[in-house]
Length: 172
Image (cartoon, rainbow, N blue to C red; front, side):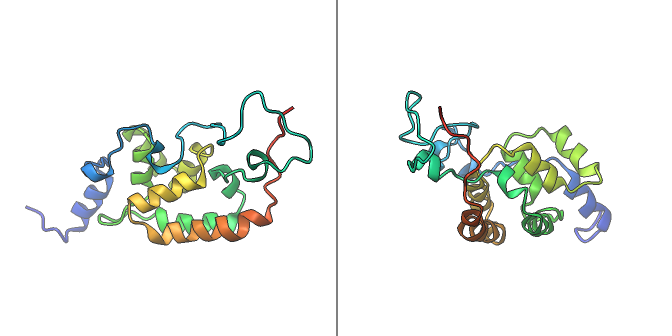
């Protein structure tokens, strides 16, 4: 039998399916337990369908749009840091595979992304661009990736406000 230090065994273990079976990480109520709706385009509280805003509106729906993963994809320095932290495969550290699996990516697709020359973390983020950065930080907390959460938190607190949050289309 191979020893646990055998590099072939370690490589095989890293490529086995990722399945989160820890009962404390399972969600049964649609993802809203963390305050974030799982669906894209969910309206902010207080934004009714019949409500229209003026061009100079300062309501919470217009001025406090939560950043999405698509928003952070424009920051190459941030992406580089996230890729460095989530790309490596390690048997005891949760990485992009765990995040993607938790958000419903099938095993075959995980394997496919792993074989591509582009960063699998970047591919995972591209495929989940409609989700909020808050949802991504929630995954970081779930998998105890405080290092990644800290980077994201700093971006939300310091870089996102500099962008003016003005790219949301107005209701008319």
